[in-house]
Image (cartoon, rainbow, N blue to C red; front, side):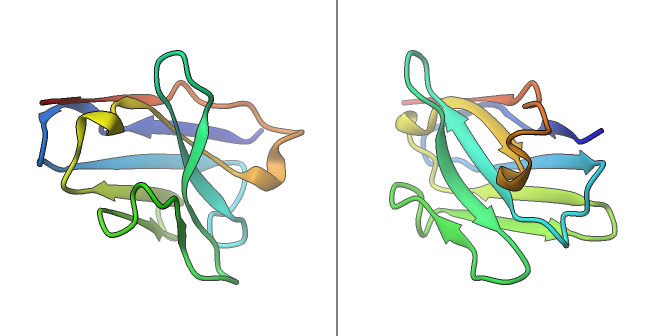
Length: 116
């Protein structure tokens, strides 16, 4: 069973930083593309960043230069370092493997709230 457990969210002021973690079980983060997504209130879930072993990391334009996705293969964990946070970054953040869209369920996500 493929599972994603996100953590690390919180309430920070604009300009601050947070580091999110996603512990993945059931598949290898080294062998699969993993993405961070976010869903703001009353908006659709959107892709923020992806990481894989066969292509460069990819970021949404809105977070380029501020967010960094990385992984620890030994811990089977994917991270999202978020710097220079803005109020518009407020959302629930999820990680997921797009290749398992038909087989896996989304985790509970982690709430990120940025105050102005």
